[in-house]
Structures are given as structure tokens and as C-alpha cells.
Image 1 (cartoon, protein in one colour):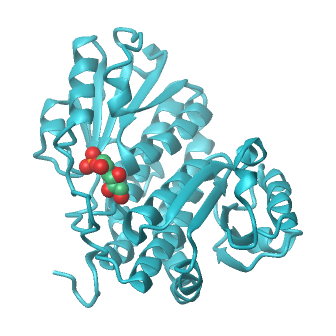
Image 2 (cartoon, rainbow, N blue to C red):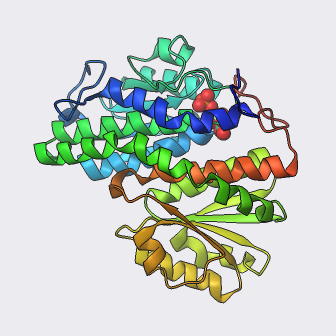
Length: 365
Ligand code: F6R
């Protein structure tokens, strides 16, 4: 049931404050302001030397953001893999380490094969899945459910932000267990998480502005997405979302990689979506924006009020996100990226919920 929405994707984008709220309620003790995982872990984070995260597509980008969190909060090295690569490259794995698998459907063939491989190698297996009865959930040692509810639109939206929610809670738990985060750090981060539903609702309020922008983006042949830090995997996700439902070619890049090749593409016809909250790498991203502007590239800047004020570059459009804890910006900045893909596809007249050549669950390799 699409409620009053034209497409499931629109409904699912709008459900995010609510389903992220449900997921938070499962992973946090809101009253005590502590992380409280729904399942007891059969290992101690202090015995883990390395985490391996494996998934496909959007779930892989959620894992990539999770990597930044585990490394920053818990000082735990994380390897992030695409499931189809992980399976065959025979990575050396250490018995007793932790392997995390992320999947909305819980049926993705390559992710499932990667899970079986990790199990054989004697790793602890933890899956972040949206379908609790799925094969990946059944075969994992530990299941951390995302409470996104059924996701019907082929393009993943609410499952992605719920995956991020679970990974954030896990990373904070790991940081506490390893003594890398103090009790005050945990309280501050949990506060940041609790704020997310409200902030995501504020991000949804930019929809009309994004809708106007989409009419312009729909005329483009190619779109570049740039970001640094956790905004880098989000740039990859923004580009994936646009290409899969609007069929416009899009690429995500780490902003710092621009000058190593992709800058050659930039001309007056090229929209460049820059995802840049005012954080500790903001100034660096601004200098990359200057490189784009100097070549006539049309910049769409997604930032916050402070970023909008400090960005010394002319942008075509600036989309202003609410002020928030810098750690968790991907959950909020995902929303304008999803809305931009959605409204561009609507302008193009594509089949938004059932894009050509794609299936909701990829059970073949
Ligand atoms: C993108 C998308 C796909 C899936 C990928 C993994 O919008 O939907 O990239 O994220 O096929 O699927 P799951 O999460 O079911 O393993």
C-alpha cells in the first residue's frame, strides 16, 4: 500500500524518521542514554583484531560508512568488501575475528556465499538484515535486525538508513568495550543518535527545493557526486541511486581524487553534487569545489548553515541541512540525495519502483 504516495520509493523515503526511530529504540536504552544491543555478543571486542564487512550495492556503501565509525570510535581496523570480490580473492582471515554481512533482503547470493566462507574460516558472523526469516539471518551466528519494515521500491532507501543506525550503535558499543570511548563520549553519541529522527524530518522539508533542482538535473547526461570522510561513501550511494532509477550516468568520487582524473570531465554541462557538512574536512572539500567552479562545473552543495556561510564558491543551488553532531551526518544527508534521484526519475518518466534490468533481491551470482 502506497498510502498517499505516487510510488513506494517516495513513501519509503518519507518513512525514514519513523523506522530509524524504531531501530534506535531497539538498540539504545534511551532513558539511560546507553547503547543496549538486542543480542548478547558471543565474543569480546577486545579479542577482535580486525572486522571484515561484506555486502553488495547500497548495503556495501552502508558498510563503508560503518568502517569509518568502527575505526574512529573503537580504533578497530575494518576491511570493506564487495561480496562478489570477497568470495573469490581468498583474503587471509584470522580465526575468532568478526565478519559483518549487511543485506536488506538477506538472500543476496554473493553475500550469502561470503558468509558461508567466513564461517568455514572460523570467524564470528554477524548479519545486519531487514528480513529476519531470510537465509542470511538464519545462517549467521548473530543477527542484528534493521526495523525498516518491508521495502518494496527496488532502490534501497529506508533499509540503508536503518543499516547505518545499527552500525552506528554497534560501533559505539565496540568503542566502549575497548575503552576507546568514555561514558561521556557514549552519552554524547547516543544523544546524537536520538536526535536523528527529528533531523531527518527536517531534511525532508527540503523536498520542494530538490524537486525544482531535479528538473534541471534531468537534462544532464552525467552527474558527479563528491564527498570526503563518511560523505564519500554517501557520494557513491547518491550516484548509484540516480543511475539506477533515472538512467542518467552518475559517479561518486572522494573529493580529493578529483584532480587525479575525473576533473577532466568537468565543463559547463556537468552538475557536481558536493556533500559537505561543516566538519573537520570541510575546508578541503571547498578547495575541490573551487577547482570545479574554475572549470565552469555547476555545483549543487549539500551542507549546513555554517557550511553555506563559509563556502567561498558560487553554487547553483545550496541545500541546507540542519545543524547536528558531525558523526552521524550520512543518515540526514542521504535524504536529499535520495530525493534528488527520485524526483529526477519522476521528471524522466521512468518506472521508479521497478527500474529496468533490476531485481529487488539478487539471488543469482
Ligand atoms: C540499490 C540496491 C542494490 C542492493 C543490493 C544488495 O538501491 O537496492 O544495490 O542494495 O542488491 O541487496 P541486499 O541488501 O538485499 O543484499
